[in-house]
Image (cartoon, rainbow, N blue to C red; front, side, top):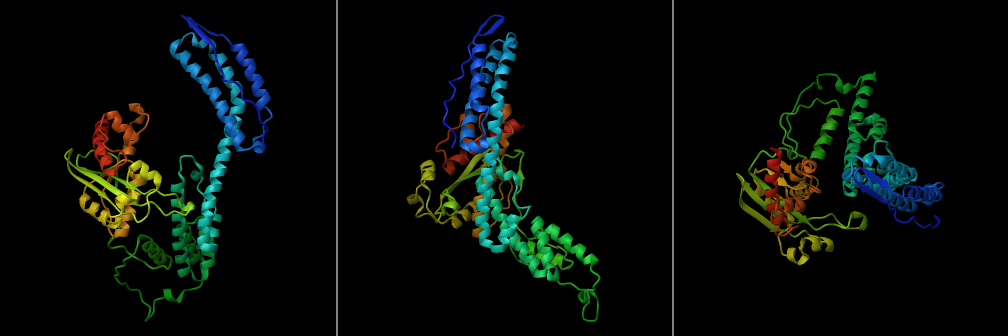
Length: 449
């Protein structure tokens, strides 16, 4: 445990300004006391021994001191830009005294936090790997498994877990393919796959093996009973199954020609607001306490939408849904949607079909839908046996393009509605958010033009 120590008193910088003159009144006093404090407190600190808690506390204290100097710099520069030059070097010297331990603490905190987050990610990965036995163990041991971006502060745990789940699902499918057609090369192909976690490497490796193999495969030799021919098949499968089938055919050396593609396509993302007719929508969900706490994934509780034609709202859609699981208390407090309100409502499968009919072939517009709402909509649609094949535009991503030029502090829907003076009748209810979103869209359209 690190020893307890008293923090330095608040850093106070006394300056006076008169026309043409700026005086740093207590410069020598501040410099001397600060240098003494820094030397006595931070010179011998070893964060590897003291740990993240001490480093974080030091980092916050030093940052506070640097911010005090920076604030004074900006204050003087703004009020007296000419005489400010006189004390600029003094202020920089004060900063340089703080900077040595500050950078040391900052570096340790950032490294330790990344290490801590990596441990948390790998803990989840190991739990997931246990579901796949020996295969799962080899997947997380692969050099291709861990993505360095996972330790960034901006990368949410939810998005990382989704990617990891996808990696294991895809790997299980790929390994089944290799085992089905690998033959005598299965062991070598599996080893190659675990190096890259990619079928591309496996295919090229198999091709190189076939090129150097001097043994003639009797199935490749035309004979009276073994001549080349073809059949036209219609294969109905999921996207993952279809990818596995095509991989198997390619690795067997079978020439397959794609004549018609009936697979569902990902929704097209629009980035230019050059249209005046669309459906603006929003959803609310149950929330979740997380798989790590034994809770199931969140489900839709409400879909709200407005149809806009030539710039005018002509029709509204608002429907609560029975999510088939409890709403978390925190979400109920935010949305005011309770378990009692949705108990007698249609299930999500029925509500998503209603919404599908309402949307038709309209463009979908929503705020932060690319990373959130569309994921729930797509999953619910898949369970209901339908597919949304319409373009979409995310006004959150559009607003981010103008944040700096407009001087906005944030780009969430509530903030933008307030900035433009739009009435947000009931925030965090899907129908109300959808109405406001339509109005915000047209304001962003003006900025884009």
